[in-house]
Image (cartoon, rainbow, N blue to C red; front, side, top):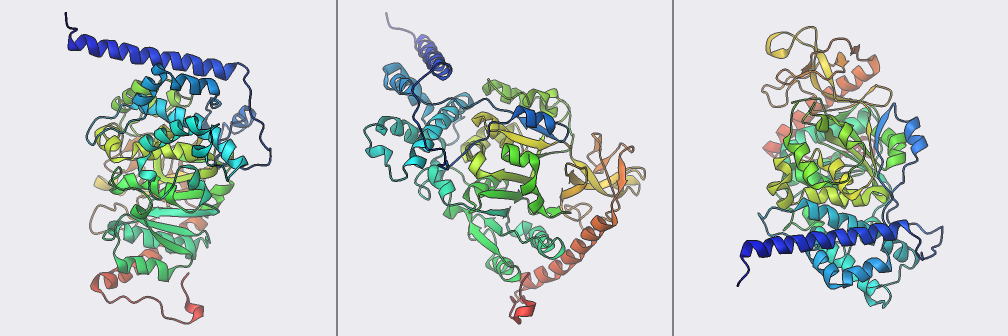
Length: 519
């Protein structure tokens, strides 16, 4: 008698689960017990050195940061290779190393398992290749079999790496130094041009800046020329020259983690076009939480409680997570937003693998079929990607605040409340940066600048008026920071005049003596 199709599917599913369990048991056992380990030179610099967080330091900084402390990575061994070369192991591996067709729902349980296996193989070969950069694993009888597994996983997980990078090890070979990355299209130009000038002219930041755009028509040639002629050490980068478009199909938010990946900087401050700093952003590279974890994030506002769709999705595929996750507002149901991705600080020498997982979440199939249906754009993908790859990260312990002025009644907010744009504080609770631009409402015409007199902290946001209802944590903005805001507004007024000329085709780049050279 023929077996019914449903029975066949169940039998295959049970077999696959048993194989996964068998591999997991073997992999876990090999991790716990002694095994021969190769000896490497202590002075060799790895492509990626993920930090193992010192719990004493974590505790010392716990009043200022929330840390995601990840378990030590599981090392790859010959026994793991033996398993994957078996019939059962090849069956498991073939399920992990696949690229879903467009509009086919990705299986995030398999993706997570594949990424953690990829990490073990990456770390294995990182030690080998760092000790002998001339080695070609594909031509080595000792390493060929494991390298083939690594290559299959990398090509299935991150197909957009090619052809620009030969493999993931080449990414950090081409990076160095510190800098700022911004993603800018024609619609974001008005924010970005003013923000860059404020960095140079008001805060006197000398950090090099990369402006990423997607395609030729994404940012007009005239606006590109504006950036390169008005400012020193600002370069333009077309993202689809570096990242394969077929599996990404960028638009809007999704390009941000890929721009981070493609940046020439090893240490990067990714900032949205409408983000404005009150302090020199270079201070973030000296931040203690960043130094310890390698990736530093900021919290969003507390908004829209009882959001279950996102956390339920995460529980459905992330079987192991750090102790940070259950303590988030997201998981507790007090806010549908956890992270504000307007500023990301990342050391790719430490956090490259977490960044790769973040990029994966923003691929065309992943984001359209699953991810963006459960979260708001790219925001949560950074910490979720780090969780999937078990890469450490830290949040500054301060939820999104508000900066602007006291409400003026009616639609502008209660006069006892501070109303304006979202503000982010440093570890000393001093205003660090805002997002949403310098206007009271960037979506409302005519545009009106904020007065920048006060800021407030709290969790009770009035979304319609953009005010915090709590009145017990209101502070007056210092004269110094108020002046930063006023100077930035004057810059934006001049930018608006320049942009009118750009759009009319009458603006001309600098052709002045050297003392009038770009900032």
